[in-house]
Image (cartoon, rainbow, N blue to C red; front, top):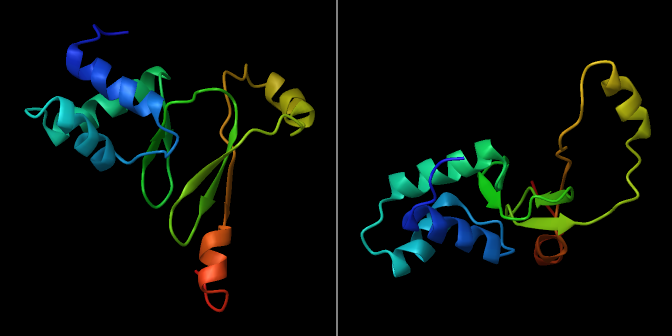
Length: 130
């Protein structure tokens, strides 16, 4: 892990303090309040580095978002509004997959995404939702 500068620490603290799964732009706007001279490029670069190190999660949907909670959990992503919801369900049985993967290698962590329409979008327009 690289040296944790003040800029990196503020970025990391923000991502780990929110549950909204922010985009890089949202992180930038929040961090800019504390560090007015920080650039969007610096925020992008540090988020990418944190994600590569496994310090935060990078959620890839239509819009790339970040999650400061690195515990094994699942995500529901609304395909209409792109809102991301955490799902903490331990009953997902990985035994069959683990047996197959055991022949290939060792699981360090897994990503599990569920795509659908959130209740809010469904209730606003239950006719045609993408």
